[in-house]
Image (cartoon, rainbow, N blue to C red; front, side, top):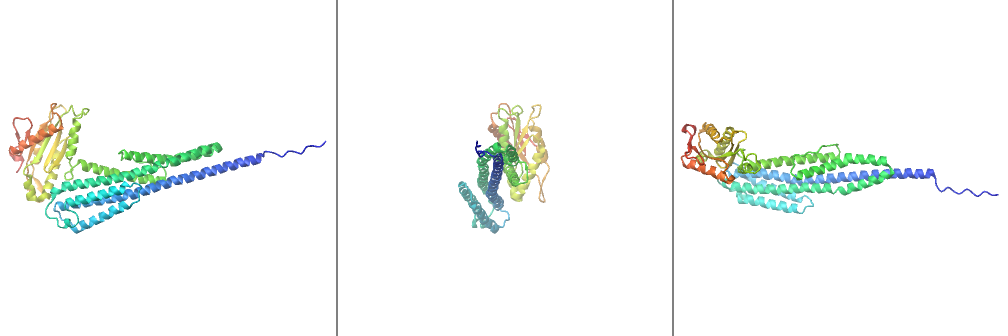
Amino acid sequence: MHKSPTAPRSFSLQREWSGAFTLMLLALFVGAAVTVVGVRFVVNEMEAANGRLQAEYGTVADLAAALEAHEQLGHQLLAAAPVNREAFVLEQQDIEALFRVAAAVPVADEGRTEALSMAQQDWQAGLEQAGLWGDRALNLTGSNVADAAAFAAASSTVRSQLAAVQQSSLQALNRGLVDTRELESLLVVGRFGLFAVAIGATLYFRRRMVTDLMRPVNSLRRGVLKLQSGDYGHRLNVARRDELGEVTVAFNGMAAALQDSHKALTYRATHDDLTGLANRAALAERLLASFEPDSDRRTRHEGLLFIDIDDFKDVNDSLGHEGGDALLAQLAERLRASVRSHDLVARLGGDEFAVVVVDNDDGSPATGPVTERIYEALSEPFVIGDRSLRVSVSMGVAQRTADTADVTELLRQADSAMYRAKHGGKARYEIHGGSTPVVEPADTVGG
């Protein structure tokens, strides 16, 4: 009887486990390789986006700074101040070069070049209109302060155009961040595939991905969205000092620069450059807010003072515009010191000022005491250079009541009362609706 030969083995535990461990190690290696490549790609994209942002934003920031400095010199020229005119003209050539450098930055946004070109045209047009372009600036004579307002408006338009270009750079950075989502999805899918082979390695790498990649990227994306929404005070935490940490530091620096720029622009939009007081726009916003249906100031009325310096033209004629500006600045300080913390002093332009006076806690008007304090503060002479000067003011007082229809009516009442005081002999104030004008004693004001 013969034994049948032994059948060859179909399975080998050694080979199977060896193959399984080989496949596991290969899966781990592939997963690690994919992770490293993916993270490196994201970091490269972030570094590239940051580099593009630095190039796009930095060139425009340099241009904006140069334009602002040039604008200040232009205002000095219009005011007949001593300025090196040849250097002023050469600066225009330097600024043109900065426009070319900013336009030469390679970007995907085709509208950037057109926006910069339009800004350059508007900038040159503003200079030409004010007589400050090229050789015309060399031949400019006398005081041209009357052109300063139009020149300032044109310059403001150019700054707004450059700010829009900078905003587009932020949007480009955001788009670069959004583009990493597809890679993120691939990495997550790869992790779940690796989970079936080596759960421990998958959990480990996922934890590293969440800690070192996903959180910083999402935090940076949220920061960009907050910047887009106008929250310039938002800052990111620097979790690690790696490439993403460098991008985060760059983002925080950019956000700080934007916040400073926004604060400066907001301040300039609501304050008078010479005196630091609120301007006409801020006054209108304050008064409009008190007429809003849900305003808590509707039940606590406000009075309005219109103030005009008597014979201010004589001050400019005798002391020059610099002396007149010094007088305005000193008068603004005295007005500010004469009111309470919740009142508002504003310069309307020229030698005209306004004061919003909040009623007392018991509902009685506070315009009378505030007016008296103002006249008392102005009774002392002003010192302009080596000269002592007494000035007087004419004031119109309008008290808001429940019958006051709107801001326009309140402004008209104060303005009308001020002109009555002006035409009634100056150095006095009149109350709208009052039967008798109130005259300040002659020893507290001067001609």
